[in-house]
Length: 294
Image 1 (cartoon, rainbow, N blue to C red):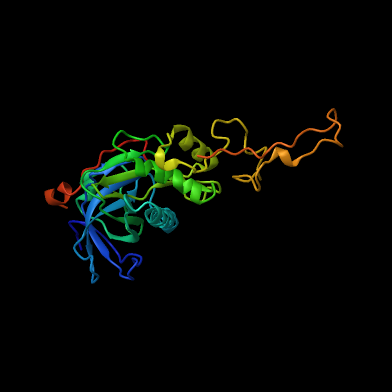
Image 2 (image 1 turned 90 degrees about the vertical axis):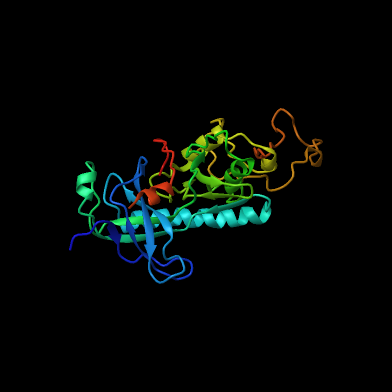
């Protein structure tokens, strides 16, 4: 049977336990370094039936379930952190798109004519992501570089994710749309100490790069940041230092009546620094930046 659109099988369940399949355009409307982006529609029996979504197919190789699960893991972690940030700073709401994964079921007969590079195939995995808005902006890239359009709350959120996880990760690559009250963002990039968030996770080096580019604002007051951000002390030399002193440093506590100054020195405190159709296409307006981890 010939199909005029690409289709998927039923997706993984969403937060309400509903599953959907999608039909999506044979031609992508945007692409990044890692993915092609298509416009699609959710089909099924859930409340989101008929919703316009973004379908993301991996650009350089067929998508696997493992690759998709990594993206879902990034998304879930970002959503959890955004909920925590919103509870602390309710004046600027931050939310991340919901995301599902599914297998390709059928490929459009016109797809081969419209695409000269790697073609999607049956039984490869794709992502089905909520459309975050028409006016898509890169607020902060995956290296922590902030655009002029970035609200202070988003820059502070990036810094806060490092603080609240005790330096284990930082969420960056913040792209999406905003209005007066909220920022709606796609799945971001996460750099983590354990490099557990996929090929765009550059580990501790990625975290340090983000903070070299980050400029703290008033909301960043009292948030921790890496002590080796400027490579003053390689962390490999001090792998187990705490992020803050375990007790106050009070030199007056020490007496030197019994110390020989030539042989004994005052202890130093732990180093710490605070701180389908034209209608479908009209629903999307992506500004592609080749350096982003789409």
